[in-house]
Image (tube, rainbow over all chains, first blue to last red; front, side, top):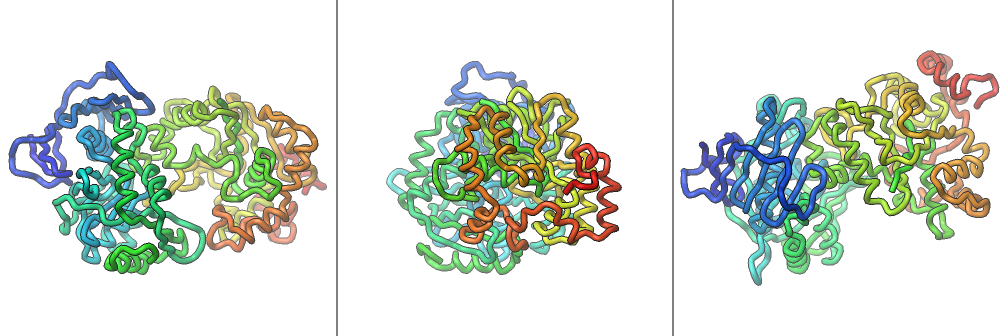
Length: 303
Length: 282
């Protein structure tokens, strides 16, 4: 049995999670155990694709890897397939499954990376491949502290700006991003077999929750040059909804109203912008410099 | 509702057909908005897959993604209120569980657009700003695909194309989904007839006035002008424009005898089948 800390939670886990910081054995907020998981939940609000969910439980099944039962924001049961690859189980566990648990605990989960800047948390949101992790790694190299890689959990604090919950100090990077950043893929652990994606540990990690200071949506275009523009709150809210992580599952978990309230709160209180970069020609280092410089300034409508 | 696939190897007229459909289906008198064309390749968009299946495709191999594609396509079809046009460059194939990635129960039909590979090579070379020799070599490869490099990620899901001939054969020789072949050269020669066939296949009215109007609004020169004014997201950044020439038979001016021979050697059987090897054919 191992004890870890991630997303502000003490996690007791029967599965070892090499990328997550160990914690002193203490009263656990969350348990991750091996155990039998049924094929269906008794009562569901929503079933689609690989998910079934109701307000207190969610069941996730990835063919060939395993089934996971997430209950009450406190427990994850893992039922791996007999010949499942352990790293494939871990990716799902630390990604979509843990996000499902965070939602049961009241967090809004966004497809975003986050750094500490501008007096709080600055989020970089976008779909897979938009460059959230590469940007995060580049900002860390320029002295910003990491809060989260792929999924950022947002909690609400009544009457105050919603806050970003720190995740754990690892970034997952594709091999070509690593080359562009001057990192050696061979020196890192692969995320799973058959994909050239690697775990990159981070020293400069911030373990306390921070109010969200700015949200940037990453996009690409086929024109030259990077354009950073402010977003009006209504457009920002629309974009936030688009980057909600597993929004359909969240709906099945009864989170729709609460998630929308947190998102509306963010849209009202937090400045938002889009960062649109060329796919090619694209030079990473000048782009990272540009974003880092923008962060050092106080938040403005157009940068 | 069911899907009508707009299937083709790249540079074979898919975008033009989408512009025709857009002009037909939207009441505006203007040339269609290029970045909002009907027939978006939603079955290839990673974000769509992730949200409907509930998995992170960025953490999956191409083979694993294929296992879920039939369910993904069924989900797209189920959500559509009316016939859904979807562009694809994928070859027709089954996943490793033996299921077609384009399931017949979610499909009404497919329009398979095809163009003389001699002209495809020229067009593809311009689009990608590559030497024609490179493109000819790619079109010959059975393992060619888009977004399949293992060391990076693209916004679209991996698309397995295969060779040009393999791509054509994969769609024409399967018996699961009804396919209507549409030659680019026939669209150029008589766009109204070609478009009427597509409308009938899709269960849409082929009233002559509506067809004429769509053909007029989506004329090549108008699409070219529209691109000059507002740009087009599908233009590769290194290409001067997406709507470049649209002509039939450009290959005669561009390809060397050796290049011509390389293409005919590799793809001659399918070219013959499609009528591209007769003396008078474009």
